[in-house]
Image (cartoon, rainbow, N blue to C red; front, side, top):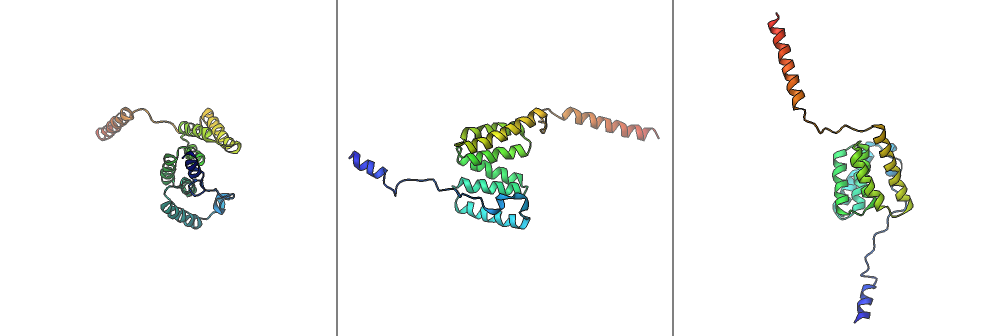
Length: 177
């Protein structure tokens, strides 16, 4: 009985393999600066179709997120990359591109957290070097103070003070005539 179970597990038709990734990237990803808007729109629409046909492909979602980023559509890019990372939390490139989006948007504290996750997911030296380089750049920008300020204080008091100032200025102008 044990040998039968072993044969079933080792059967080639039952073995689940991860699909092979292409060796070379498609043309628009090699030099993103040389892709025209119309050509990029064609690639985006084909990637959207491919994602609808293959909803479980994290690789396709990651490519679509990159295409949206090239098209300067941060909201769609964020949505697609968040979905890709949520679908497979162990996918290195989805995590790296998700963290890169935060880096490009200068949300540096969040970019640092997400890039640390990518460092942990790296499976080889090349992936590790990509994530470490990005983490190094993020930390340099944080150290240099190049980030968007976090709005964690209420603006109620300054707005009220400004409104009182404007009203008093108007009254002074009207009554001064």
